[in-house]
Image (cartoon, rainbow, N blue to C red; front, top):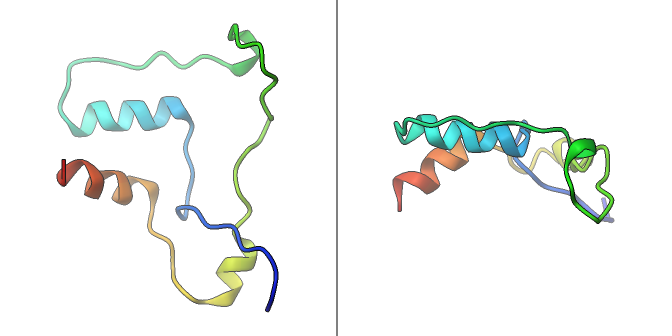
Length: 79
């Protein structure tokens, strides 16, 4: 099938979840303070949901995406 295919990890996380996962995985003694976009002081408007829809890609059965946790672990282990 032709068209645009979005690709990302099988599941998703917030920036705060990503940061906390990295800190925990690296055994750092710190925490991440999650804030909602609506209370941040950014000038640019942010979308309510910026996750990519990968349903079309999943129907193609080309490759099963890994979890974001596995991808982050692999990256961190190579650094």
